Length: 218
Image (cartoon, rainbow, N blue to C red; front, side, top):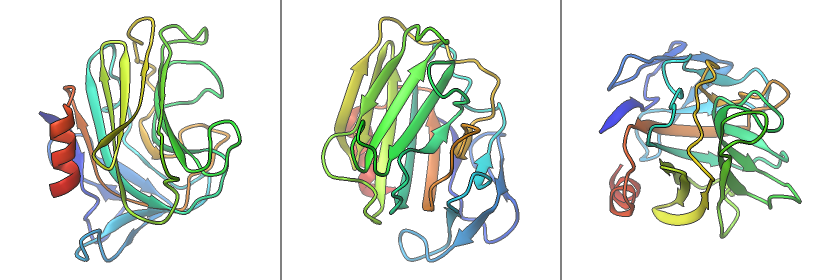
């Protein structure tokens, strides 16, 4: 069952409301953009700036060793080398965090590839990563992404299909008390110029059929 869901459909204001839980987000240098993904309502738009993000505080993202799924839609044409999509990473290397980033133009990762990571400490204890395969995702189209952790494994789904997977030596214990953010979480990073809608956090490991259903019908 989903614990949190932010549709980003509000017409104004600096707050985005959690329709399932009690964790509302605060907008910083972000705006409502329309039309929405289905031609109706609004979506959230971040600017290419270090001070553009949505802050959910510590009410989300402190996963411990629990199973979780993160699901969202995004659209961007960023060419920045590496930008934060969602997470609570404050370290440039190993640390305690969960992170989903996009490589706009990065010779190490690839152009337009997503990187999902979970890490426990500065020594890289139980570190695991999953990198998306296939075409570049910074093409301006809407893409659905799901990050699924079950035990030591981390799976990355793109547009309803399994796109990358990794397995750590153990389960990273994520409890850093850093704010969970959409957009920049790393102090030295920059948010992408991007649109987002329908961000959800589930306290379970969604299966391939459930993720495909979200991709097709949400």
